[in-house]
View (cartoon, rainbow, N blue to C red):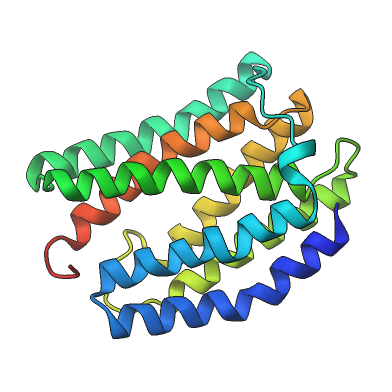
Length: 207
C-alpha cells in the first residue's frame, strides 16, 4: 500500500464529513450532497492521484478476471439495477437530474478506482495491505452519514456494508488481473443504478 496516499486520505476524512454536513444544510440536501461529492473528487482524490503518480502508474486496461469472479461482480449490479428500475418506473426523474446522475456515476466510478485500487494499492500488495485499503475505502463512506435530509435505502448498515462488499470484489479483481479497468466498468455500472435509486428516493423533497 502507498502509505503516504493512505495518510493523505485519512487526513481528508474530517474535511469530507464537514463538507457533507455543511453542504446539505446550507444548500438543498441533494445539491449539497452533490457539491460535497465534487469536493471529494476534485479537491481530495485528484490531488492525491497526481501527487502519488496514480494517473501514470495505474493500469487502466480492461482485463477480465476469472469467470466466477466476473459473476460475483455482476450479481450486485443486477440486484441494484432491478431495485433502481422499479423505483424509477414508479417515480421518473427529470432529464436534467438523469444527466447529473450519469455524470456523477462516471466521475465517481473512474476516480475512485484510480485512487483506491490504482494509486493506493501496489501490484504486489499483501493481504494485509489489501485489507487496510478496504477498511479505508469503507471508512470514508462514514462521512456520507453526516449529510442531512438525504434518505438512504437500508440506512447506514446498507451503505457501509455495500461499500465493503463492492470494495472487496473490486480489490479482488484488481489483484487478480493487475489492472483496474474491469473494476472501473463495474463501479460505474453500480453507481448508475445506486445513484438513480438515491435520486428517485429523494426526489423532489431533497431538491
